[in-house]
Length: 627
Image 1 (cartoon, helix red, strand yellow):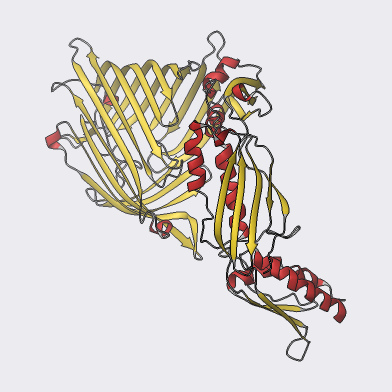
Image 2 (cartoon, helix red, strand yellow):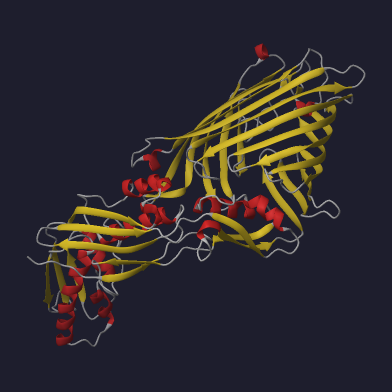
């Protein structure tokens, strides 16, 4: 019985964005030093072996498709076809070497006893160049007969790491009975190492591995030892790159708890929060594995954003036409140290100017907010000039946003068919939240989001009247054929719904900005922005006290040349209604088809919708995903 026990040292490095990981040494007895990594059997690769016109010889490979792809890509003999001065002796020597190299390459796919026959066909009238014929008969594939995963270091005895050990064992990808390949072996080791180093043990490494292959029995015995080293706990932050902002701001944004177990996910989240805060152009967060594991120093490297910036924007949408905007940000207003964001926007439907002041976050990530907004917009058939003042606190997290605020509204409405204006004012206390559980953003394929607003207040004037305002919205995505290999082609169902109500006595005079309208790109397609409202006796449309909308959409990937593309097709139906009483709600329906493109700046939505009630088509375009 012959045993194949070739040993080589492989250096593996875990690639983790902005998080340093130690070098990892692993040993494997499968592979050849200097050989390229073999692709998976189903990896796309060229299968033709035709050579350029000036080649010294052609190569014809008679083998299963995956083996043919492997040899076409990686067989060293391929490189020598460009040498036009090869003589017969040199070609014979290369053919002998090619047989050994072919065996090693085929071995990376788990076939360690192949029959490889290489023959030469001389040039002839039908073949202007010599042809090297390579025939490969695979034989029996080597399968994993035994697997032994061992742990050393703190993970071996730490009760808190029991689940981590179980996860590494249960999620090991190269199981007993499966075909052994070098790629599968390397992938399994790398996955186990990642699972080891992403929680508690950043200095973990693979201390030894062995793949014992018996070609006669086509069996592989695998052994790997994972050395966790010491368990690490989060210590103080060592911050580099601060000039204008203080360390307290960084600590509150990072939100890393001293003494907590090391978690790569928590460090990535802290890094993301720093990057998303707007205060920094870049942020890198790593743990210093050379420091005391009981209080490991966290290294935070920052590049501060400019203190002030001005952003000019142009755009266009089917709802509001061409759009111009200018936004100025001051990250640290003198005297108070708050951030100020001021914006001017002009489009066909609205002209607005506003500013918002936001304090730095407190230890619980709450911020004080004060804002003012002056705008003129077309709501239904009313030309509305409004002012809004708001003050309160807000908290933004990865999954949940919360907002508590007092708000003053003043709106002067003029019907476009008359010159008579209506003035209304109100003051209210409000609470709003949004919960997001999507798989990926900004291109979700599954998950859901839910938001709600609850407010109560009173109108202002000679006869104040109390009111309550309620609004809720929901969105969900369901992948079709979940768990099936056809899921990517089947697409998903996207649904959304919203409902709103004003609870108050009849005849109350509320600012129109507190009431509801529907219609537009993200509401009921087939109708213009704010076209769905309460229709008065004279034919004009105003905002109402009750709102309902719903939408169902089938999103399906588009294949181009047999491959999934960045485009999707859609079929949808939208329904919406606005009224002053629930019994008066009369739904307006829009149906249509569209396309989605995964653009670099977010999803682009292009829809052609038919408004059943108005009996006409309308084109809708929208860019971005928000909830």
